[in-house]
Image (cartoon, rainbow, N blue to C red; front, top):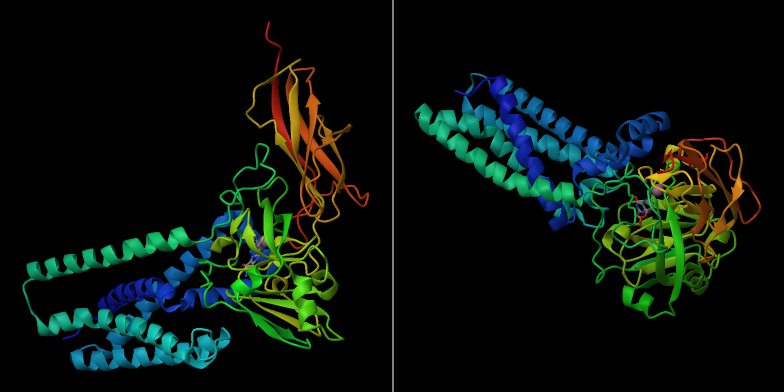
Length: 502
Ligand SMILES: Nc1nc2c(c(=O)[nH]1)N[C@H]1C(S)=C(S)[C@@H](COP(=O)(O)O)O[C@H]1N2
Ligand SMILES: [Mo]
């Protein structure tokens, strides 16, 4: 006799867990995305902007992990519900009936995935249109659902085949559980380690290095797991409305005359005083040179950039033809790491990080305005860098005392407009004094500033900064959230000054 619906629910949750372990363990191996990733890619850009903002405000960089955690729990619940249904239908009718129901459930899941989920995700029926191909995709899902079916049926088979004593059964169950944990543990640890978490709450304190090392360089992507592209088989396609479309291997790109430049990158999600900014020393080829070689036809409006992770964005043709637009394969003298977009990523002057597409696979000249991944959600399409500045020293917990000189300093950035002046204030912006601008590092980089300060009374000070860009525009005091055009407002830190030591 088969166990009841409740037993089926429990078996369904366990079966879904086994299925998820396979899905996460095999995704790299077969190159197939988990259904959680496919669904997230479809849902996240459609989340209403307000809800998205609330999520980021409440959870910061952990919003992405939370999204996947919700997805995992939902999958377990759905697995449980399906298990409960199969057991309920077979209730009192024996194991054979249950196996039949189980088989129908697997078939249903396969058809649903192959004919609805994959086509909706743009992968075509049964993944036929994905880069991975239908064979691997079907294999991946078939094994996943069979695993679900087998684990779901186990309790029923156990009761019907081996009416063993309770003690032995418990031992078997315990052993099974240990096996599952041994398999799940490493997979989960690897999965969590591989996630790209945006570290929004790490305080941006202390003067940064002029060139940000790869380690502390911030990381943002839409993905739970960033693509690890095989540079050997990778090709860059250049096509669309051009005279001669062509393809290049990484070696062919590296053989072109290299261009090296310093270029600062900042995420549009960087809050005032935030740390999602870094300055790299990049090597690559000019986007313009490749477009010229292809011969852009009349009527082209946007250059659309496609990436391995399904990300798409575009920049207007004139922007793509700017001297500073670079396709980079090296960062700080070493090949790009996969987190920063290996084998090839874009760097565009004057616009926020989201348009600096990583893991590029294709460049296409198109005759219309293409809306990118985040623009579909409502983020700025032009995405010009706002003027930003930060006080980085002294740090909030530095011991300051009356009459003792301290160095005040920080960073300022306004994309390719450059920084014309920086002013700072020790009284929350009542009065301003000019700061000294440090070395100009290039056209698309941040600028460091400093000033000497001797506090003349004890108490709390709000140290504030504002910059003027190279066009003469003063940074606005008005604060705006990161969404949709990038944060504005003045950065301010509070420091405590002790009475002079006697
Ligand atoms: N293919 C792809 N490119 C992408 C993204 C992405 O999710 N996928 N994220 C963008 C965003 S929002 C930012 S801020 C920058 C971050 O680049 P970094 O991680 O190298 O600092 O990459 C951009 N390029
Ligand atoms: Mo970003």
